[in-house]
Amino acid sequence: MSPTSIETTKAPKNDAPKYSILQKNTFKNTTKKNNGSSPYAEKYKEGPSYQPSTLYLEPSGDLDREYEFDEITPQIGREYPTAKISDILKDKKKLQDLAITVSRRGVVFFRNQDITVEEQKILADELGKLTHKPKTSGLHIHPTAPAGGFFKDDDSEETDPEVSIISSKLSKELYIKNFTRGKRSGEGWHSDITFEPVTSDYAVLKIVESTPTGGDTLWASGYALYEKLTPTFRSYLETLTGVYSQPGFKKASEGKFEIYSGVRGAPENVGDELTAVHPLVRTNPVTGWKSIFSIGHHFTSINGLSDSESALIKDYLSELLYGSHDIQVRFRWNKNDVAIWDNRSVYHTATNDYFNDAFERTGVRTVGIGERPYLDANSSSRDEALNEYQNLT
Image (tube, rainbow, N blue to C red; front, side, top):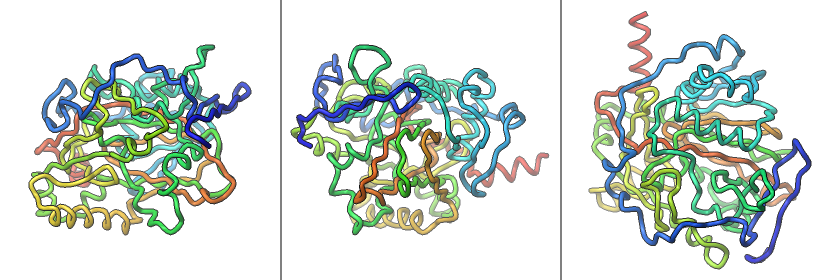
């Protein structure tokens, strides 16, 4: 497929939404170009979205009284096998319970859902609003949105910038060198958009075109990874900040499309140089639990350390994650399945084991923007918080 070729799909009602890949003039950019990095990139304790909170939330219990659920592993993952998200959306108390559950369990799964793209946008945004995200935070617009996306539900023939397309077709076009069977698959672990000054809270993914085999997604718990470290090492990491960046998107865009450099879900998220500074350990504002944030291919280096010292810590944390299947959960997708996860406390990776086969995989992803990452020194680990709760009851 050449960079100027046009590819669109049309779907019947109640099937996969219509989308575009590398088709010119479907992404309508009305904002001026912002060259360079965000003015807040290195000011990690500044900006309207820097709102450290200690208003940790407890669920009402309404959601779990209404729907049966299964804990997929002790550390991470829950599935509601019979619940319909479209029904939960009608009840704000249950929806807030869902947000808190996602923040506690890391990722929550629903099978064979009928939510529309618009409902999925509402879901991702409301999960954050009901857990007190900054008023300046909305839905993320991905820097690569001009490369492809899902058309709006009207006759405009414009793609919706607040909806990301997860497409094996597009990935093969832009990043084919990253998907060889000889490459170590563990290098795909990441949290979404940590290259932005204001990162994601909740992400929602619905698979609308699934493969007959392969294409699983894995998630891992940042709470549990933190708890695998000694108290001394935890304390040291809590003093550090790191650089998170993603130059690969700009490189992939060359000759194909222009990186979207306008406001991407929060006023601090601007610019075509995708880089930010964040703490290595952060507090989840919903649970009050500490999590390792410095994982994945967006995490570049540690401030104040030499290159070799930085690499030692980066590699150690990565290897600890790769070797800890006890804090991971693996999900086998079927068409119309939905996963919701909290990017502040989990990492995930796709399994590209079908890329050399004649299979295609397409997903609708909506990504909420939360607050600027922060560390509350008085917050606790998950185990400490749960043990304290048990002692009080």
